[in-house]
Length: 301
Image 1 (cartoon, rainbow, N blue to C red):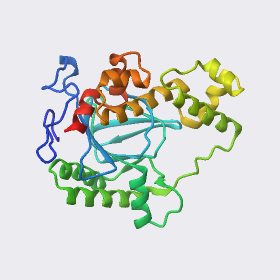
Image 2 (spheres, rainbow, N blue to C red):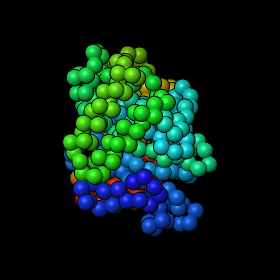
Image 3 (cartoon, rainbow, N blue to C red):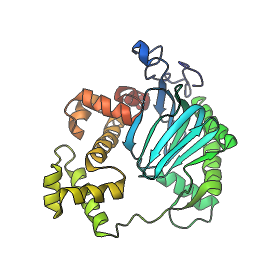
């Protein structure tokens, strides 16, 4: 899927759903954006996204696994807790699990990129076989100007779209191994050590359990024996976003699992706590980059 509206395929499967593309149900002002978020059976433990975004922006969210993307045109701007970084053509972006971030266009023309979402298990397997890193392996840099590795990331996509499992799997493992060798290091332990971090972890557990019917901030703080503002500070310090933003992200994560299992979007919306399907559509599209229906279709093909 290298040009606007071009349909990538995987072994003859259905083509790319577009977000605002010329052959989608898009309004004229949205045309020029397209995206395909999919999974290839020959690459277990990996999701793929290829997209061009202009007006679309990703709110603060995090991923259970890793994010590795190659910017092929335009500029992507990534917002992190400690500041903003930018990546242009030839740039590679690397984000570790559970690192809260935003993403948006850093130039009027937007940005085009190819993204790999390898699971923590897959990266750990590659790290154990190819590096001497101790503990949990991750990335010590967020961006790198590395056109060669960027081209290899796009080649993983092309091999997967062509249904070439041998090439796709080989290239994927080479890419991850080289990224870890050049930009990798051990990640810090996630065990909550401070009282605030322990309170945040308890709050997260309550929100996960009561996802469809969460308490108010005041009720949650009272349950945990703290104040609302203290809870806000602790939660944002631990997870990079306030509880309400984290809950929206968590609902979308759970929605992804339900959609992958074949649940219709309307039922999924109610199950994860959104008031209706339009609310699921809006939050899901903002965070994942494609609508729930397109996401589900790619995984049922």
